[in-house]
Amino acid sequence: MEFLNNHKTLFWSALILFLFLTLQIAILPAYTNQRVYKPLPDAKPLTKDEAAGRAVYVENGCIACHSQQVREVEMDKVFGTRPSIPADYAGNHRMDVWRNTANLLGSERTGPDLTAIGERQPSDDWHLLHLYQPRAVVKESIMPSYSFLFEEKEYLAKGDIEVKVPAEFLRHKFKKIVASKKALQLVDYLKSLKQTKLPEGVKPVEFLYKKEVKKAVAGAAGGEALPDGTELYTTHCASCHQANGEGLQGAFPPLKGSPIVASEDIEVYVNIIWGGYNGRPGYGPMPSVGKNADFTPEMIAAIMNHERSSWGNNAKPVTAAEVKAVMDNIK
Image (cartoon, rainbow, N blue to C red; front, side, top):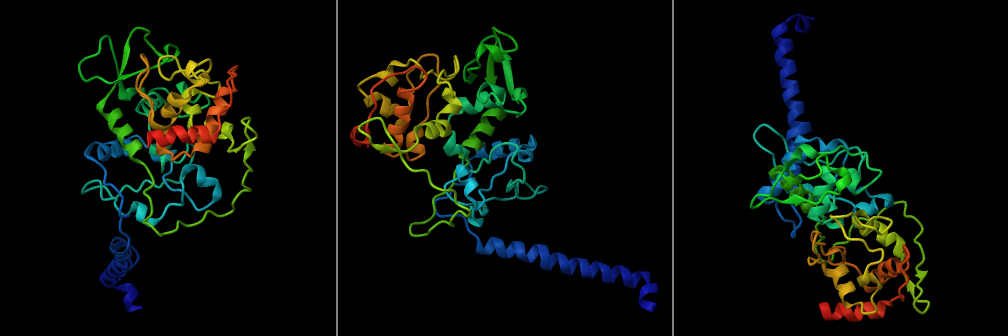
């Protein structure tokens, strides 16, 4: 009873217990994790602008709606090629003296997971337009507009990065939308989010609760079995060119009625899907979608056949062999 009646003894006992538990539960495990878990060999540290973009990501509360963790369940496979592992976050450091490490794993998915958004969507133009007005690229989006990260100008100055915004989303019809430094840094950070490849010989953790794999569908070209072109288009192309193939005026060109899509000479077409394109006036550069996503000839052929037979297009189907012949010349 004397112990309970002595306030000094109680205070020091509680303090010592608190410090002991802090050491055992927080400090030592964290130290062990830092010692045991190292970044993957091919992991790249953030550049100065990418790190600044991460700060903008934190500043604007993006973690409230987006996660950065691919779980080991099959339904997460759309967000990454493998489940996330501790080494993916081992290169993260404290943001500054006052703020802890920003792993940004998140716990909500009001919006999609961003673990590999830099691979899924490598286009600067898409990200900038999406930040300015999400519904310009994803009609059903509930993401708020971050238009305060952009400026409206009468004329462009040297070094200004203009965002190609469709007229219906402009507040002032004749003004130009220019990305601020913070917007550009945030896009740099988002584009840096890619899953690092595991070392050779190391197998990734398998996804659980796997769905039944869809059988390859018969392509129109000689009954050839190809992946589902509609599904591939929806995953990799529709965010820019839209589900109706009409694109966005001034931002992304239409595929509906496109002479390149309908051409019998598929060399340019395959080159664009694989390596991107930067030659159409009035539109921004298209990134290397096929190269970034590691498309196979079968995947490219399936996408091409979907585009060549949709939205009123009626071009001759292509085969994987024809696509492979073009890709061999590219590589």
